Image (cartoon, rainbow, N blue to C red; front, side, top):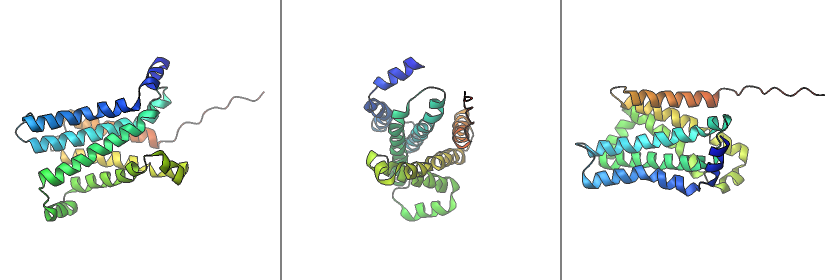
Length: 202
């Protein structure tokens, strides 16, 4: 584990951003050159949403991994921002490509379709996290207030897995894995940590 941590410390943060944008590049390539199947709009929506959920899960896994000795904390901000980027693009694809900017229909969906409502809740939860992801926000808000605000990530991941579950007509293995990972990470983060035994005084 020490070797892995030492290697991670040598990896620049920009590498995570570059690698995180590779799936977006493949989606753009497929959209331009017709490699997304018979329904490219749905493929784009699904691909963007799934990548957003993956990066959100990855960012939430940083703390549990740290508890077992794998320290990737320096990459958490990058993973969170990549998650927000893909979720925002997922919403943009729904508004622009799928709904064609038909605002009245979208407003109706926001009151009648549970998967749309839950998805929007998840996006709104991510907005303040992205807006306060820079170091200056921590200094202005204070570490305690900043940490409380960023617990909205729990709501975002819960909304993400529920959105996926409601959207999926068939619960495939991948859907079940996403739901299990999301709920498992929430359980690990929300359950109280066990008390460490203090060494006996001399």
